[in-house]
Image (cartoon, rainbow, N blue to C red; front, top):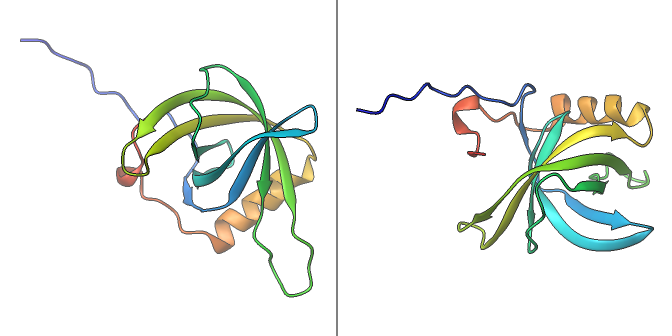
Length: 131
């Protein structure tokens, strides 16, 4: 009999449901557009029509929802690395995990924390999508 050691949840921050538009940008040009499936302060799972290479560094432009009438729509620019890419048969596309390592504007990290904790639904750890 083969015994395996249980693997713990590698994500350190709470995940939140979101359905925000996102773009992968290189040298000022949009290369691919997708939609966030869930997000935390340290990473996100994005649905794309494209399969990304593991370890690829990306610049994400996250189109944040408008917070109040008359306010401009905010775009967060976050640098990250692809940590997984798998076909998601439920959505007929690729689910790509991206780990954040830098926010272009440092205060955007606090902005994202505020939006996640006050306006988004937390996902219980038992419901996380598998990596």
